[in-house]
Length: 116
Image (cartoon, rainbow, N blue to C red; front, side, top):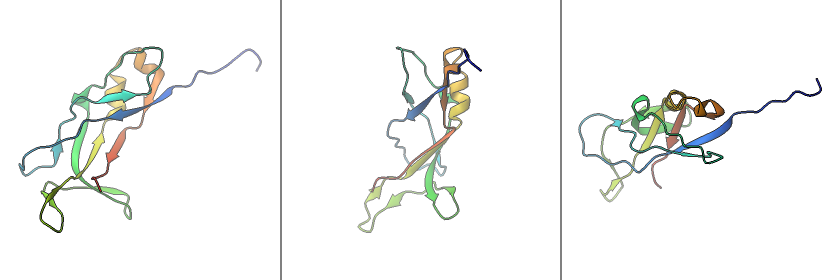
């Protein structure tokens, strides 16, 4: 119909600082200082990090499932190596941002692969 139009929500990306912790028997990762990429018009918006769950582990491409892993990873020489981190709850964390957040959308989950 003439004269009508739609403004679509802008897709955002969440960036997280590198995580590190001492072995404690669980795979939980605190979502420290998540940063949003893609904001426009000098909008100021943050994710409610209390609504985000993070876990150490690996992504299994065959089963398309994330597998939690709380153990220290080592390479063939015995050196400690990075693990992947999987965050969920991003959409809920964005929704807590009020009126400005209604202009944006974000994937609910993000996986950061272990360093190669």
